[in-house]
Image 1 (cartoon, one colour):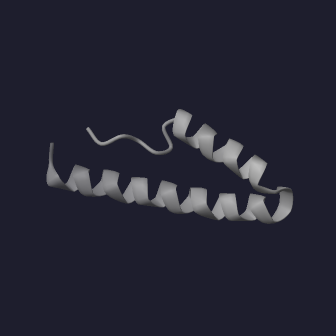
Image 2: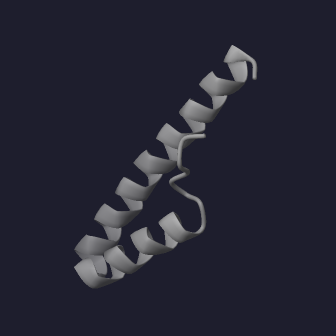
Image 3: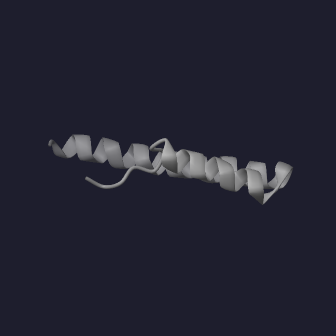
Length: 53
């Protein structure tokens, strides 16, 4: 695998994580922690937080 591909993947993972934090914070302020937890669990299940290969 090329180094550039690794950098792109790492950047994408970081963006996904920061987006999840923003969404989680918004949901916590509006609907409480239960909904934020459900969203976060959904992101993990759907590959929003990929495991290193």
